[in-house]
Amino acid sequence: MKAGTIYKCNTDEHGGGIYVNGGTVNITGGGIVKCETDDSWDNCHGGGIYVDGGRCNISNCVIRNCDSEDDGGAIYVDSGKLVCRNVRFLNNHANDEGGAVYIWEGTSEFDGCTFSSNTTSDGDNGGALYINTRAKYKHSVKNCVFDYNTAGDGGAIFIDDGEVEIINSRFDQNYAKDSDGGAIYINSSDGVYLIDNVFTNNRCSDEGGAVYINRDNVIVSGVIMTGNRSKNHGGAIYVDSFNDLNIQGYCRILDNHSDKKHTDNVALQDGIATRAFVYVGSIEEGSIIHIASTEKGEINLTKGSTMSQYQYSHYFVADGSTFKFTNVKEKKVPFITSVFSHTWSGVTFIVGVAVIIGALVYCLVIKRKKKKGDSEQ
Image 1 (cartoon, rainbow, N blue to C red):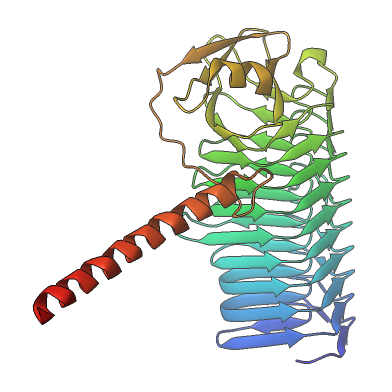
Image 2 (cartoon, rainbow, N blue to C red):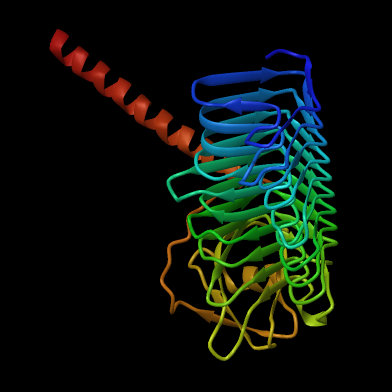
């Protein structure tokens, strides 16, 4: 499909506008507008598009004002692969999960997309995007904008399972109206990587104004979080129970707000039987990260061999708590950075590798010339 608009289509089954059943479907330009699934005695998902196997490529398209009686106001992926480039998801609604997109099984890529003003009904999650796949499925969100999305938990994104990377994206004015995770709620231990993202003015009615973490294996690298708000703990990030958070790169987490004053920024749950944990990777110059314990107890922080006491004291601020440096929990923290990071460390690494390779090549050339000269003699 090239250009054109699919307008005001309706079904009481799956896929209000398009049903993809295997093969490859390319949608370029145009739009899908006011399509919906409703009036079904059974489940009917995907107000605009339902993907049941195969591959669906969508580019330079607008999907707006679509509605699903169940999951996925704009798109529902039952299986297969969804690739969206420069797609605008506007004002879509799901009566259940995933106001714009719901992914059940399969993989997905979003690049340069905008998710704005998408919603779910009361008590349902993932205002823009809901990911609920197994570990073997990978999902990528790059260079995207999420603003003014609303849901119960995870105002913009709810990650239930699956490996997810979110890179160089912006989250602004998203709202978890019923509970946690104003922008993102993480309930997956398959690996979630938040890299070079900006979170501003997101809010929730309970904990985690920007991000709520309910599982291990979450890496936060190169993020900026300011102006986010929570009614309870963690104006920026809340880490629940025994779970951990890996922090690295250039991070500025400050000037957020929670009604529990000492946990305005990063809050680690600290109870009698539970204690969240922070692993520290390579923190870059200029970072500032405010952290607190919910009970004003000790903050468990690893003391990595690559960081000095000076760096810890300048990059981390304990709000109403004290740091406890420990190596009790052994865990390797992978190093993640952009190729061109906020400082010159990424470039230095590349140049260093180039110099080493150049030296090796030079040595090999000299050695060959010597051998050739010996044989001629």
